[in-house]
Image (cartoon, rainbow, N blue to C red; front, side, top):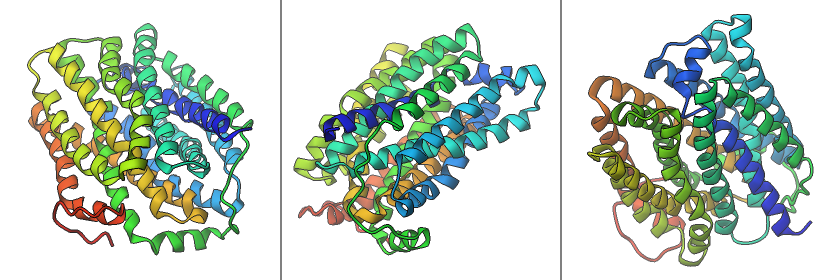
Length: 399
């Protein structure tokens, strides 16, 4: 199989994992109620938090094990099948009467499995020849298109029946597992390391903390939109689950379609401008969504934010692969996903708690200014590790 064919298959796999995950977001309120929870933002918050808590715990473990074994795709397939099984278990909850605490446990197990499929498929893309920006752009467009399609179809499915998104997620992950088993791997030509040695080498590269920090904040905004954004559009503008899904798609469609060219652009001009300048503009755009007085302006702002996010995301992931050594790439990208998952958790918790106590406008301000802040604080560090000669701002110690 050609590298291009492998890149397409892996991107389709990443897309499938994201579709399965985002199926649940537009109708999360209805799904939680169907599974025995309350119709509050706090119940939805914990339903989403459980999955990402497992992402945080297991992302680097999957990556380090794949580095040590010298195989990624069989492990990714196992992760996808495990996630599918957990979604099917959730569909049985209303029948067998599992308490909502049991639902949270199933979400934890499902998250531990699914992050293997997600993280290792992105790592396999990073293993391919070609520019890191190009490969991470392929991952980015898959993530964005998966989220866009999942948000639209998930809303329609939830309006038809709250359990339909769970069935759809399970079927999608089974298909992803089968696809992964057809992929010919292209791992770096290096001697495999023991799992402990992998983590030791990762710790010896403190510069990785710079893209990890950006990954944390970027994913925090995504988690914020996945929870607070859905409630915001439904409560403020009176949308149903399908309408909220379309509002999310206004972000995810440009976010998806522009990531590949943005990744290629970062190969040509470097990572610093897309990461730093893009993050500042992205944060301002988030605030614009929260203060938009009418639906059409809020949707327009979502589209602009999606385009700006597309500028930032592939360059940030490519920065990880630039800094990491080839034999530790799996663990490095796993670490990036750990920080990203922590960011999702922060987005759920910070967004949910701020909204509950201070309202939607305050929540959008807090999250948007966080994105601006990380760009200003870490600007010089990004310029330094990306090899740019420019020096735009204050320094930080990435270690």
